[in-house]
Length: 147
Length: 118
Image (cartoon, rainbow over all chains, first blue to last red; front, side, top):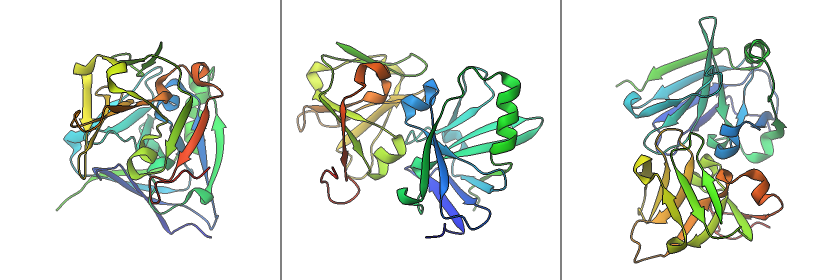
């Protein structure tokens, strides 16, 4: 079954929601279970495509907390009402990149997820940022819910 | 005894023994949290750093999901009214992975049938 034109996802209470336009006509998306200390504790599995387009809509920006650790180059956006972590962003050379959590998707079933594990332990900073620039979503817009 | 610790270290949860099985649930909240539940009697569980936690309840608000307010790690769920249930679910993702290696994971269809899928 082809992917929906726009993949939707949100935290449980809806404060952090997104639409992800996936390029091409693939039937599945990657879901990388990251082996870092944060992702293991959060059961996080992430997807991205450098040609995808992501629009994140925040209901109440006062209810988004941001967490970073280690190299502090990635920011985890945690809904401070319900606690889900729908997106991670990384600002590199003035540009915002992102990955989204496959656990919060609304209209993509598990059959459409190509699961793998990823371990970036020991990667140096330059390689890490280079990998994100190549693989993460590069067209990212974060907006308020508006009226 | 086993200890579950959040990522930033502000909150920890002590349980008396290694779980015999773990539950992965596909309901709207568990799938988003990516949790793996180990069940205990609430009176057997010790929470350190409770002041650093935030809670989330919705719907009938029978359960409160408790997480670290800083790093967001989901620590446990508890009954909002402890006279209704003495059960507690502790998120095994916060144990050292080696401590729960090999423990059987059962998949609960919390999204619809409330039956195990395996």
